[in-house]
Image (cartoon, rainbow, N blue to C red):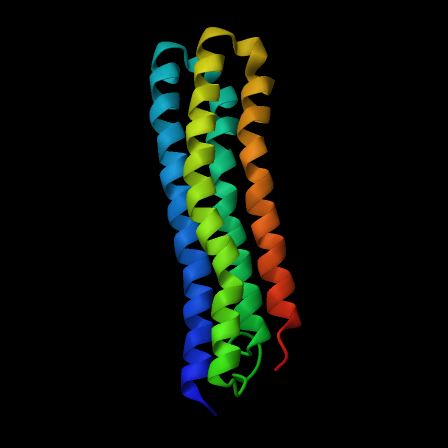
Length: 158
């Protein structure tokens, strides 16, 4: 077994979970800061701002899903580790990069968009759906990155 190949694949799984998770944590924090101000003035708006705060958390989930699928594919979870060449390990590392990188940046961007949606809720609570839609538009790119990562992970020959 080439331990470098396996190590590179594991680094890919780590990157997917780590960077997408950082993006989500930062995004959720941005919205939380805005939401706390609104709720301190009007506690009845909590449920509306909570929905907006949850949106940037999905990138971290996508990164976690990618990491679990990758670890399962290479046998770290639910089997014995595959004998990966260095090239295969690099391919798995590269396969994790779409969701790692897009998850990082889209989580933060979605947090900013959702924080702006919190501003809508503060002034016109009946228009909160518009804020949700604006923030959800950022989600499209995280979903595309997740799809690319999954397709790559399952099409690398072992």
